[in-house]
Length: 127
Length: 106
Image (cartoon, rainbow over all chains, first blue to last red; front, side):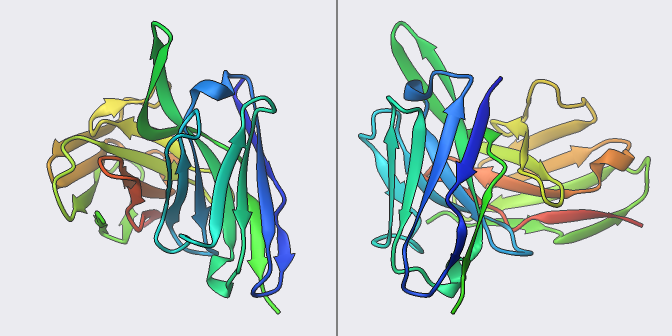
C-alpha cells in the first residue's frame, strides 16, 4: 500500500525556519517525481515545488523561490522541504504528492498529475 | 505562468442532478489536465487525468472533456458522497491549480 506521511509542521515566528519531511513507503520511491502542494486555511490548493526522481530537475512556485528548498534522500525514502524566511502567508497545510509514473526498460516517465497524497502537516507562521 | 480559472466558485445542486464545472487555461495546455475531489480535512483525490481519462476506482458518473484552453468536469446523477470541492490542475508547464468549485447541497 502506498503511504506518504508528512511531519515537521508547527508554529514558527515570522522570519523563522522549518523543515518538513515526507516518509514514503509501499512503492519504489527512487523512481518517482515528487511535489509539495499547500493549502492555506479555507483556501484552494497551491503547487509549491517539484523534484525529479534523481533530483536533477527542481522547480519552485514564484511565491517561495529563494526561500524554500526541496530535496530528497532516495536511500531513506524521504522527501524534504526546507522553509526559510517564513511569512504569515506561508501558513498552510503542506502536502507531499506523488506524480503518476510509468517505468519501462529501466527508464521511468512521470506524467505531471498526482495519484497519491499524504495527509498533510500544518505550518502556522505567527508572532 | 499558466493561470487556471474555474467556474462557478460555488454550485448548489440536489441529489440526482447533473453538474458541470468549467476550467479555463490562460494558454493552451493540450490535454494535460487533471481533476481532483477534496473533502474537508482530507487530501485531494484524483478523479480524471489527461482531460478525460477516468482514474481507476472512480465511479463512471464522473467524466471530463475538453482540450486546449477549455475543459469541463461533469457529474451525472449527483450522489450524497459527491458534495465536495473540485479542483482542476494543469501539468503542461510546471503545475497550477484552479481556485476550486464547491458543490453544496441545494
